[in-house]
Amino acid sequence: MSGQQQKKAIEILIVIILFIIYLFYRKNENILLVKNSIYQFNKEFEEIIDSLEKEIKYLQNSKKTYSLTDKIKKEGIVYFFETENHGVYFQNLVPEDIDYKYNEYDFKNTIEYLNNITDNEFEQLIYAKIKGEKQFITYTDTFNMDWVFALNKFKITENYFKYKKNVTRENKEYVFFSRYKGDVSKKEMVSIVLPDYKIEKNEAVLSGVWYFDFKPTFLKTLVIKLKNKLKMEVSIYDYDKNLLYSTYKRKKTIFYSKKYDLLSTGYKIEVMTPTVFSLLRKIDYLVIIFTILIIYQILKKNEITKKLSDIKLEENIKKYYLTHDSLTKLLNRFGVEERLELPYYNCGVVLFDIDFFKKINDTYGHGQGDLVLKGISNILKMKILKTNIISRHGGEEFLLIIPNISKDNLLNLIEEIRKDIMRLELIDNLIITSSFGIFYGNLKEKNDLKNALEEADKRLYKAKNAGRNRIES
Image (cartoon, rainbow, N blue to C red; front, side, top):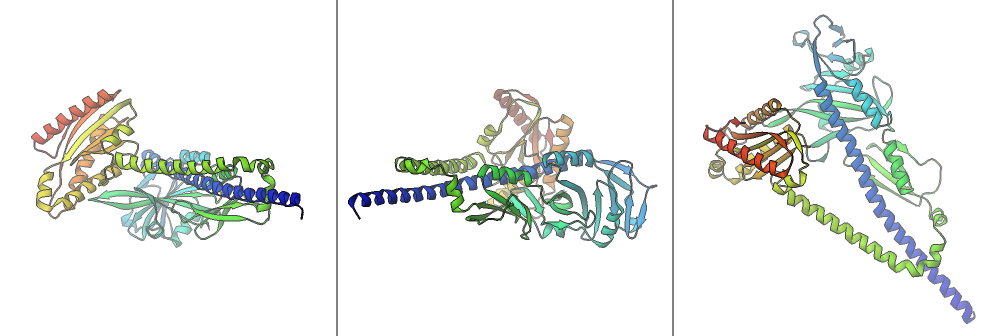
């Protein structure tokens, strides 16, 4: 081989080697893109769960109670009631236990709303109220005698939720069922089930479950959005490995395939890349010519992106610990300033603390004191909307900022919290009490909040001087 031929071969080899390096870089870049896109997919799915939670609150607020003494019917062991509007009531109790009341919910608006945000993939909505493990009450959006037969044969119990619970983040839990055929609708569905709790003493007790039934393709919009972003084929599998939806239509060899978790539901998001030859055809051939010139910049960019990603993650972690109390996971004073979105109108500013907390620490130990703080913080998380501000203001003192609420509703809410705190059974034979100071008005700027805190603080001390375990407004 002549010297000229050797030089040409070396140049071709260098180009091939650099091109392969470029491909490996592209692969790593794609992996980072996929991870970020899956994170966004999960975030948008979580927004769907948030929407379902909001609809539950809407349904509870829309509830109307009617007497059904003259409308009672019976089929087997199931009692049922038809109404002129929507909603059906079923109950498999003995006659003397029947409550002759019917709770009607605004299912129609909820179903229309859910179909708007899921491209008409919503099927049906059911509420099962738990009474022990065998007795139940079910509300649905339409009456169908098939429901009577289904309820005679099957029991909707708390075990549905107890043994298939997915906890995705603090104070958020739900069940995401695998694909199945409905007993009544005879349609293929997947169900998202959210719990309904009530507070008894210091515990949240499961009182019912809401079933949101969707077509198996209800994640289709998110899947197509993910495909368009990645330029890759995407499939969704339930936790029984059944295929729910896939953009992958034509049969071809897959070069790379990986499955990612859909939060902690047990569902999988599979991302598939075409064959390496297909990938080569899509790459601009000019890249080969300029590979030698740009490879350094590409590698530096990859390194900088990784460093920026690490810095951003570290900043987010630091920000969380900077703005949250480590014991109760409530906002601290820095967190309150971060969350403020003034102006607030018709706003309640509430300061309260635990009566004789120092005595609790001195008598029972700081460990028990911490338990009391966490118990009260759990009550606040369940009673106060996440969009409002809940803060451990310092020591045993807590701050609540609740906008867009009437004064009467504010006072009723704080009274419920005061009573719930008294029901806490954390230390033997000790009734825990708290004193509250409330300011009510408009907060247009930070100086208004400062004045409101001072006023609430004065009223807190007034409550303490008046004997504690009371509310001053």
